[in-house]
Length: 78
Image (cartoon, rainbow, N blue to C red; front, side, top):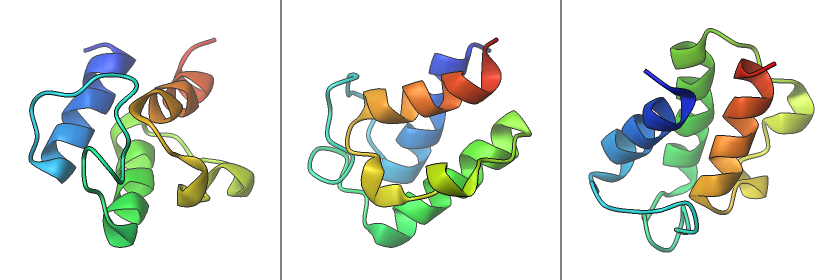
């Protein structure tokens, strides 16, 4: 499964929403609260078997779905 599909799967599980796009707001459109944002970061590490740098673990820097995709791709592609 591609990185994009896995990220969309994680976000769908957390938000309970099946339809959203890259520009969707994590807090506005997907209604993720602060606990869900922390869970998102932990789930990214677990799902992709990665360890995020401390500088990338600030959930407030993740605003849109695209931000999450770019974060995951930085660690998984290359």
